[in-house]
Image (tube, rainbow, N blue to C red; front, top):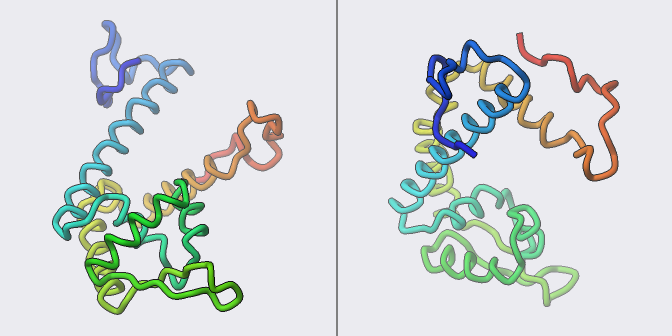
Length: 178
């Protein structure tokens, strides 16, 4: 599979990307473009996290921590094993960005919360990401809303291979952007 950038006019097998709008070609171009976007966003995230002496997963955890959150819940939000959250919490605590407190109902549960310094760092990190992420500088506000809505639609649509195919009545074939 080719995962190199394929923009309009890029030659692939003697055919320009614009000239071949068949479904397989379109799907391949989407995959190529999405892969490139994810790589670019990942590189930006790594760079910004590094400037703060953090690992990329520490940065992600900070964004997922809205208020006090159980370690198990953070693991679910991040899609990782709960045991890995201990490493993240240790690093963020070492930087003064996070503190742990026992749960109110079950003292065995550890609740993670950002410190005031952690909240300030999170805002700074978000501002830096907003300046450097491709959708922030490459799309206007209406396009960013459309992009967000399309991403949410893809995330929320059940996978037909998982046994619950989308019916098409939910607007799955309709465009959501003008």
